[in-house]
Image (cartoon, rainbow, N blue to C red; front, side):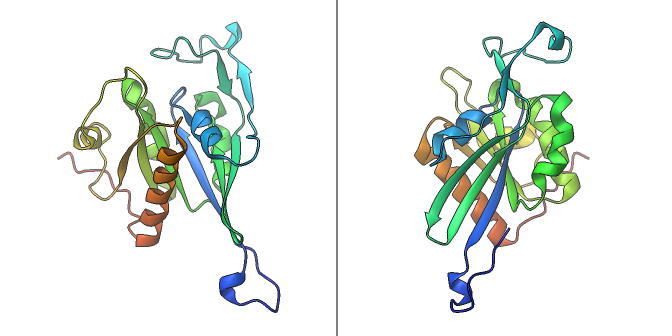
Amino acid sequence: MAYAGSDQGGPEDAPVAIKILVAGGFGAGKTTLVGSLTEIRPLRTEEPLSELGTHLDITDGVERKSTTTVALDFGRITIRDNLVIYLFGTPGQERFWFMWDELSIGAIGAVVLADTQRVADCFASIDYFEHHGMPFIVAVNCFDGAPRFDPDDIRIALSLGPGVPIVMCDARDRDSVKHVLVSLVRYVMSGSRRPDRMSLG
């Protein structure tokens, strides 16, 4: 998403807005990541988990989590006067995946946030971005007490090709999240946008 500048300014002066998605499984830390970086009060659409959703919401490994994002998380960070990044966190629960198509419109790429305790929860996000040809990176959220794995092992577990970057991060730490976004933008600008799965045969 880019907006034209005034007639008096050159192309380099035209304001540019970059839209980035933050996806991943339920409880991976998407809301925390957006909230740790945004310069504005984050828009959150978290609602308490209810008994009605117990047969739909898989909470294995995140039993202490009591809320879920039902629409999106939204944040903004200004890089310079004419460059702003908008972050859109997608809902992680399967029953809200229908919103991903709308949220992905205009995005340059996505961060798939992974929890090593529930790494399989990344597959839905990865499949979605591969299917739609959107460049993405995988950011591994290093929770306190969570098992640590080598990025190559995570790549094998997720069947990712060698071109997709894997970044270790702490979703609570602003500088760590900045590094994740820089990694995604560099990946997009490099033109290496083929998120092919590794050949398993």
